[in-house]
Amino acid sequence: MKKFVVERNLPGAGNLTAEELQAISQTSCEVITRLGKPYHWLQSFVTDDKIYCIHIADSEEVVREHARLGKLPVHTIAEVKNMMDPLTANLL
Image (cartoon, rainbow, N blue to C red; front, side, top):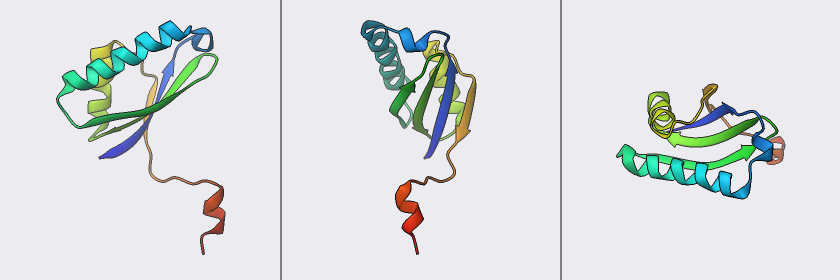
């Protein structure tokens, strides 16, 4: 399976209430159950006007199907090719 970063444009996302975030989360989880395909939503980062989500799926098409079924906006989907963090600087 592959890891994807999903960018969702959602003006005012940073002002969503706890209840609104809960509803969005519940929708995503319900759709994952209905998909009937291997799929994992790891986490999301909410900024002022966007939500960046980390998903694991077989393909970009499955990520788009998840968004379509949940009526969740999608601006871009990018496959993660590699990861790095401060410890990467020490690899030798």
